[in-house]
Length: 192
Ligand SMILES: [Zn+2]
Image (cartoon, rainbow, N blue to C red):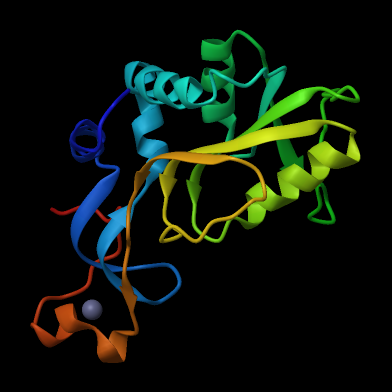
């Protein structure tokens, strides 16, 4: 099972977790920026992380993995590959409701593992859990790479994350990094 230091090393190497002074799309400032999708550019890292996640649920009989698009697509696929089961994804319809499209189905009584890259409030994961239940599936657990909930995430089923990361955010008027005099930058903006 991969340890916290190894995961942080992969995150640093792939630019998943940036340290600095950032202006987030919400307008808030932060000393950290997390972009989990970046790690999935590298199939070997996706394999390592999802294998470790699959191991957490090795004791459960699982028939399929599902994740919400877009963040949960690759992790659901790769975890499914590790478990030797089907992997599919849920996505929003025009009204914004989480749904199965593309002919994906869940059979009544199938045991389903729900995957997502990062959980903050857990809203999308809860929607997928409800979707699985509507199809008659049994949710055996939730797995994520990163838990940003501060340990408060509770889905009513076993939940495993590979790493907890706290990303503290500040109002610009009350930002200690601004007070220290450094300029906030938008993540992803290129330095010339
Ligand atoms: Zn600031």
